[in-house]
Image 1 (spheres, rainbow, N blue to C red):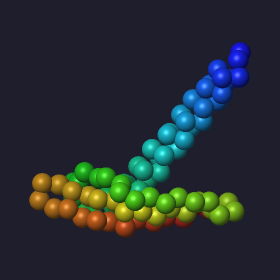
Image 2 (image 1 turned 135 degrees about the vertical axis):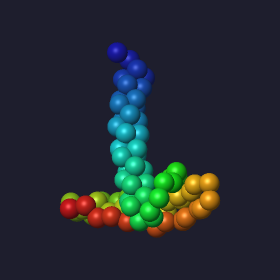
Image 3 (image 1 turned 45 degrees about the vertical axis):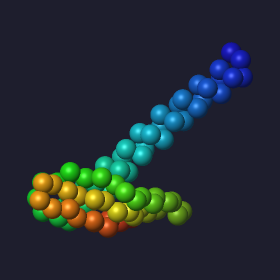
Image 4 (image 1 turned 135 degrees about the horizontal axis):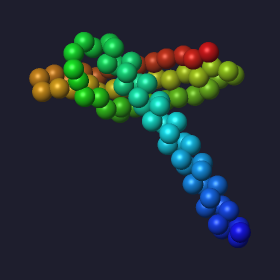
Length: 81
């Protein structure tokens, strides 16, 4: 296997892992926002910051919730141990 093919394979595995992890974080932010506002809304994450300190993962962001009649800008945050 050439170095280029090996590099491409490693990048494909890395990107697949990162995209899957991003989907989990985005879904978590949307779920937290949905719990804060009663009703049926579509959700879109406009801002997201996730970082790890020691063994804790902390996240925060802004989620837009909307339906036919209403729009909400919902701040979200969480801490994992």
